[in-house]
Length: 497
Image 1 (cartoon, rainbow, N blue to C red):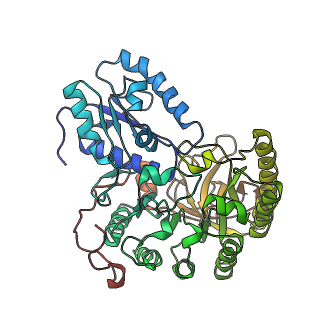
Image 2: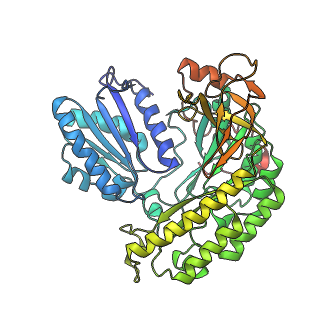
Image 3: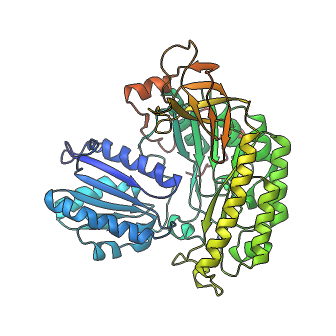
């Protein structure tokens, strides 16, 4: 990609809201801007270009966007030539409404137009008027986009975008479109490129990640992909998010159990334990199927940490429905849960349903659910006390606490562990990206503590990169490139690109 001479010397900042897919889209936006000649704005400095990568799923997303745009207006007034761009799901939904309500915005681009951002910024400068570009759908998966990664040791890798489900509470399919699957060789080539730069952990991303292969009609594609990714030398941890219970198959459980690099961690959204509510949500499974998946996962991987999402107060939810949710939570024994109070999302069928519940009823049920889950999480974490855990030391989380001297890292099952960073003779200081082993000494509902000396400390290339302040970048995988390292069964005829 050529360097835009008009962009040379200009700085940018990307602000991200919402899900992991948005986080990875922001890495791509950063990569595109840097390839076009922009540089990241120093911390605390005003940027020449501010990009807001928005979410339409979270509550009050609209208010948050327009509040942020309001705060940016005087900054732009004081800095002639500054540009503001709005992308992501809310941009896809609101389109030209954003420029109407905030005429100081220069560019609005949709979820399918990420690659157009540098050209839209240039066009807005040249024409001195706002540019709005919203495509309705993707033609092919955007594998050619570069990315500037946030982490030296861990990377997001998209395997699909969009979703073919029709959950009544969710607006994502309308904004991200139908599922588009990425060619397996392109995925593996991106993972290999990250590992070559020292990355130890990848998370495979998709709106419905285990439906991967639906576009090229291969129901076993996701399990095959897990196994193939696990064969990449130097890759130590593989995670994925988020699967859907309706498409979750036993071959995925087998691949998780048989592939050493795949972490025994599973985030399996429940949403409700009531069959009646699940039917109104159009989730495509019922309580028995869900609990059956949990049982089979635990039979294959007794150490698996299973987490979930639950929505409280969906329209028409009765006290009996809610009691069913509590019962499923008791049986499933989740390591942790992301719990949400239902709120209307404009454009979703659920927003038009009768029997919207009073806020006080939803709040009371929410508090009962979180109290139960905290009790279960604490018991599960207490069972970890005395166990040896391998931690990938995390940045942010991994910064040393000045008061306690502790750092933090993630165990292979995803649990957060705060540990004492004295390594009993290990070589050098512990850094984000390094790998340590320690023994859990104490438990809380949402984290573990390990206050003894480290059993081992392995310095890694990822730790070197973090210490040097460098981040992995991927230039984008060209469509039609050789299927690097892909076994024949994983590359269906014609691919999906």
